[in-house]
Length: 30
Image (cartoon, rainbow, N blue to C red; front, side, top):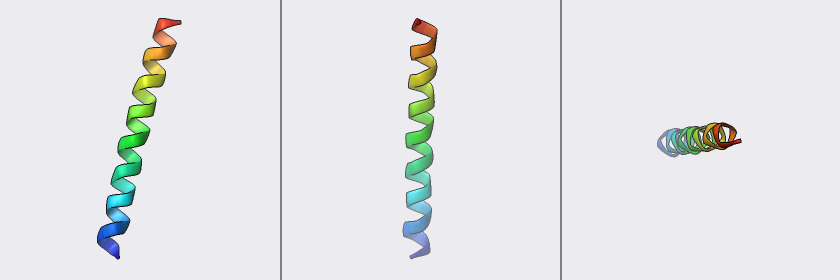
């Protein structure tokens, strides 16, 4: 259970970093 919990947090953090990088790129273009 703890393993799945950490994997979920890791996946969420990766998704968040991707969204942030894409958002920064979008803001730069504008």
